[in-house]
Image 1 (cartoon, rainbow, N blue to C red):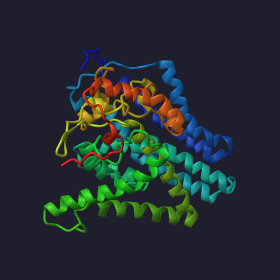
Image 2: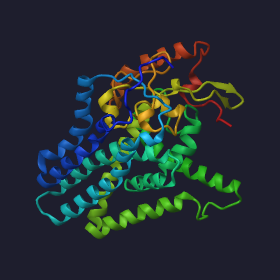
Image 3: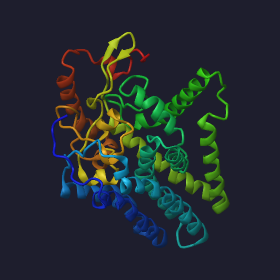
Image 4: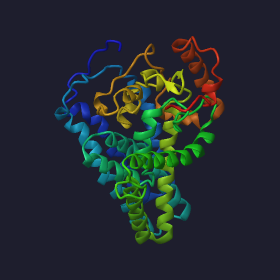
Length: 380
């Protein structure tokens, strides 16, 4: 990795505070619930649009913290991911109680409000769940399960840990967006394929132990129980309308997640070495972004190249890479996900970068057809 100055005093509270900005979005959600109307737009505006503007103001952060920093010195960074779990649940269900009991919001406003809450639970909640699921303590993995169940996407943990990280950049990974594949094709494809691949991965693990898929140790039993609990709670609060609003929030949270997934590995493939074998995962197989403000919002998720190199590394210690080691996004995730919604713009921005990536890293490959169509042999 290119030598870059280390971030000073990563263990200080002042270094962690920018990542706590996510809590400022909760009063915005409460205001939107109380006032309705145009204030509902503040939820997407205060996430993607605000932090896009801040990226232009504060610029890039290309400094790297000391990866050997002991975990005991990351207390304030870890705490925000733990605190967010009850905050999100109280926000979603507290607003559901308030909205279904009040009469100042029309039906469309209520729908729009919970769509906005989905931006919150998707941008913040699923990102924090992603951080927690990668950690060793069972308590943190449980918190990840709770956050994912609150958006009805619990299987993401199994798919991400057992499939995505193992097979990223190969035909077996549903989440690696293919060259030329629009987000609107990618989204319905991954909704189904990720569920199936996650279930099959857990089923295969149990089979190796001589156990059936319905064994109580299958995490899908926990996933289904937690999701059913949240649906029941929504029903008790607001009946079928409460369930609909809760599901609206969940849908838009998943939409946010899959938009980010689409961006993170778009068109990047690992070299097929023959006989179903692929090169090891390297920083070049994820798009990297060093925009400072959007990394505050997404707890360094944009340092994705390093995340795939060291999946268990805590977010404050993730490293960034220069253009010689990892492909760089021109902007942070907020702008790039908006561009992904417009296929022509997306291709215009990304395809020249992908062509340059191919020439830079794989000049020996002259025919990319099998990579573009994901028709190389499945990895063994």
